[in-house]
Length: 112
Length: 325
Image (cartoon, rainbow over the protein chains, first blue to last red):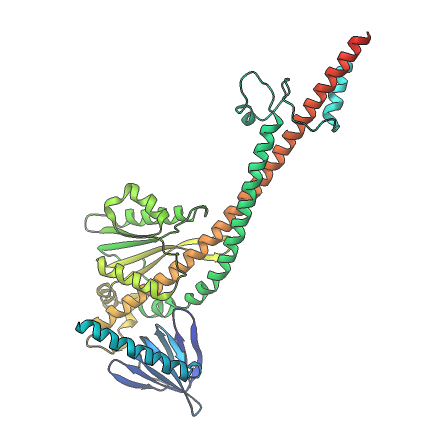
């Protein structure tokens, strides 16, 4: 009994295969989904999705969207998604710094 | 008799006596369209006129061939995007259903068309369907409004339905299409227009020669609730426990907005593909027509040339024989 997971974004299909378990982060906290979960439709926050395949955990970053779980089929539909392995830590760090400086600059402009 | 024989032979055979243009003075059977360009009194078309015509037709043929190739390359670029975005609206349809027959008070018809012309009949079919939907859904308590994307639909709908138009958006394809842009657009529409059901009219791209006009329906959350309670296709929406957020209504609202922006994204991409495909086939048929026209003009040109040469020959020969005899 495995779950069929489908992660979709407007531009492409990020993931479409079977998994054992997932941990999803929603507005009201993190939920874990195992096979034979009750049918549920929920909003997904910007956060991390963990996927377990055979004792190995994979992570994916999601930019918010919806998830529909029913009949051992999970459809997660987000604005954008990136697999953990595809993210370059250096690049991400630089982007983070640029964003932080941008935020600070905005603060200054607002204060004036 | 001898002259008639010579004339007949001259018409069958093409001697290159002199290539200079001659304005001949006898009549000959020619296509009626060319005769309007002659001044009165001349019963022949000058080869100059025919040659100018041939030159312009050849230029048009080159331009339409180039436009066809440009459309083909643009089509290839957008086609992959459109196919990827097709998987989008399936989870929504599975969850929320697609009910074109939902009976609602406030309909909004979103017509998607192109900005540039020369793309065959796709814009006219979209406008026809939008008008049909408008007629279908107008009555004592129901009303229909238009939201127009693209110049061509605007030109056609502004003429007779000006009071029903809520929003007009043009120049969509200046920057390459991506989801963020479309979602901002969807946001604008949702903010400014009150609706119970949104019907998006676009041309779905099945293949390079087939574009089917389609209507996608997105219902507002209140209508979704109403339909879910009455059973039918949306009955199993209630079997899902809805989490995340305070109330079920808020989630459904978010869901409806998301669904609208995804369906719009898919619709806009498909319409762009259909536009390029239609332009390809329109330009192809016009290149072929230009080729046919060129053939006919070449025949006319040759006939004219030969006739004038024959006339000159006949004059010379008859002059010579008059001198002798």
